[in-house]
Length: 183
Length: 250
Image: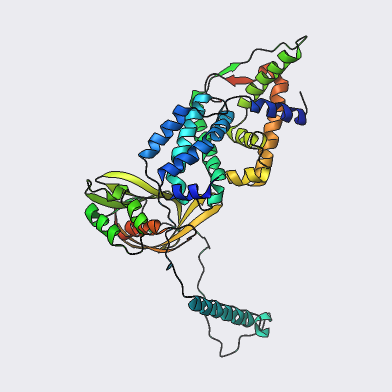
């Protein structure tokens, strides 16, 4: 990330910030989608995070940490969106997926469906840790710093996320899933 | 698909699926909003003089070092290490004062609510920007784009709000409010307000001196962290805190 651009944007240069936005928006959107599992919500969160980042940019202390800082804003925007849409939740019971005698390809699709359903069963905080670690490839200490929480908490959330995924997948059909909006 | 390693491998492959490009319309919508949105100012307003005489700096450091060594030697003197000795007859007797339970957070010396500063003419603010010597030409140009420096507006009022330790400082322009910064407030004593902003890289602290008279609060910036602070921030801070006293809105 270009430090000079961040500095200019910090001083109120909107054009500099627009350049930064074009550099980071794909990655931010990808992360938001993977946490929220909904393209519409991910778009809303991306927009909110970018506007909030612009407003708060003068408070960024270490210009070299711009990227981590804006990811932190994004993840918190995901938390807010999750809170806001919680009341939209509606549960249905997934139908069992018949795996006997299926091909490898079909089995992979079934696995994806299981993962999709199981992932929605995780808390938003667990999802964030899981995505930052497994999708962005951040080490746990960096995830901890980015989220502003202790490394032990990150480790614990990741552990419970993985365990919950395993339990949910093994439970298969009995998992409640959400319809439409975020779980 | 049962053990944790297998789950993680499958989950990583699954996470790779899905969109990887932000829709243009979402990005453009955000940029349009940003075009009409002003930035929050930093509470970290530089309070030190920008240049310090190197000799003065050395003198201060040496003085502090001498004081620290002296204090250390005093505390480590043999008398201080004895336990259970009788005080000498000439020793000063310090009256015993019952100590209140120690707490870093005191009760707020004024009620929660919104406190509004005096009205300042926008034309006066524009004149202040143009005549402030520590601002560079580009900083003046930047400040003149701020909401409080628009010639078609007339009145500026700074305000702060304290509700259950959540502190907000901002201003209104012709009655339309704009938040400048948010922080968590605690009172170190009846005259010192500690503002804490939780930013990436750790909390950021600002101390503000306060004087309360009934429903009126006068504020003075005591200290704050300065890294990255700019002259623009300093000006905005002086404008906000300097436009007190702040009177509680009924």
